[in-house]
Each structure stands twice: as C-alpha cells, then as structure tokens.
Length: 309
Image (cartoon, rainbow, N blue to C red):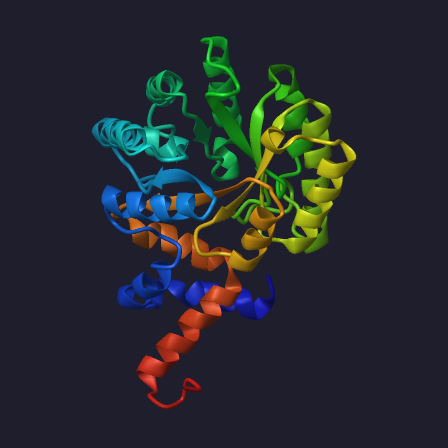
C-alpha cells in the first residue's frame, strides 16, 4: 500500500455512513437472511456455489455469541428448505473466541454437527494474527471429535510468515483449506509486506497443501495467482471436484465468469447482516481503489462539480 493509500485509509472513518452503505451494496447481500437467499439463488442459477457469512464478529457477551450461532442454524435451515448450493463461513470471534475459548469451540461444534447432519460444510474464517493459533487449535479439536474434512475446515493466509508451518501442522488431517492472501495488515515481524512476497507465499502454501492431499479452496481475485493455480491443477490432473475457486461477492466478475465457462467450480462469499458498516470499512481499507471511489464521492458532496462528473 502506497503512502497516499495509507493516508486515504486513515480518513475512512470520517466518510459518511450513507456513502459507505451505497458502495457496500455491491459486496453485501443486505441486512436480512432473505437478502442472502435471493443472492444465492441468483448465483446458483448462474452456475456458482456460495458460502454464507453472517456479519457479527463485533460481539461482547456470551449471549451475543450464542445468538449468532442461532442465526447460523437458521441459515442452515433455509439452505436445506430452499435447496441452495451453499455452505457457511463463520468467524471465531463472532462465536466468542476472545471471550471464552471453550464457548467458541462448543458453538463451532454445534454448528459443525448441524452441517454434518445436512451434508453441508462450515468454513472457519481466519482473522487477525492474535487468533491464528487458537483457531487452528479449535479446528484440530473438532476433527478429534470425529468431524471429517467434508464437514469443517480452516482458512490460511499467505500474508503470514507462519503459514507454511501451519500447513505442516495440519497436514496429517488431510484438511479442506481455503488459502487467501489475507486482509489484515500485520507487523513486518510476522507478516510479509511486499506484493510479490505475499504472492510467492500463496503459491508455496498452495503447493504444500496439494502435496498434503488437501482439498484447496483457492480464494483470490489476482489473475496471476489464478493462472498459477490452474497450471498446478492441470499438472496434477485434478478432477473438478478436488478443488474450487472462491471470490467475494461483487469482485472480479469477469475473471469468475471465465473460470465458470472453463468448467471450474466457483464459490462466492455472500455476507449479510445488520453490522454491514464494520465489514464495509475492512473491505475499503483492504482495497485502496475502492477507497479512492469513496474519496471521490465524498469530495463531490463537499465540493459539487469538482468530482469529475
């Protein structure tokens, strides 16, 4: 991220909520579950799978964590009743990881049990680096409870220097793993900072996961990384159901279309919920280009006729 981008990101909290809401409508299904159902049905009709995420990692009590788990159970019920091709993604802090490790593990076990019964899957999202070890520890405990790789799996972030070691630490589980660059800006001591460094570690982690026999969800909008992944898929002669690509709702539509047209499976991350603002701010901070759109919109409000329109 350039110095200008960093300066721009620091101004984001001052951006009017209505501006953020308008921009975020591209990336968020809406505030309610029926909004997510509408989006997932459209994605399924266009040959895409989905993973549904309930926005709610900003929780402060056991009751809020339990309520969020209840909302995920409602999601599973709708997925079943509507016959949707969808799974769920869950952030551990939303289930109380920073409040009570045992609570988070137990709630994740409850959701994974429900997924198992419905033939669905729980993706345990990876958050900032303070949660990485506990998240992977909970994942191993869930596997030890008897849940298989078709029921639950973690996310690993190429940005972190520890990721190759993390791949090795769970390789014995033959896991299902989503590999992504990672959106959290971490200190240089624990995370790669350079664009090419992160890319290189992504490819190295992908190779290590494939060598371990993992099912890999390749989550990226980076065309170069997609090409690297496709080369490995072809070289290993992987069948269509032995991997998948993943993207965020509203991002890189053309690239996703090409993947689907070429016969690859693509899963779209579909968030919904009333806590859209926090999610939107993270996305804006992750992507300076979107932040630039916000800046231009804000400038246009403050100085009509000066936004280039």
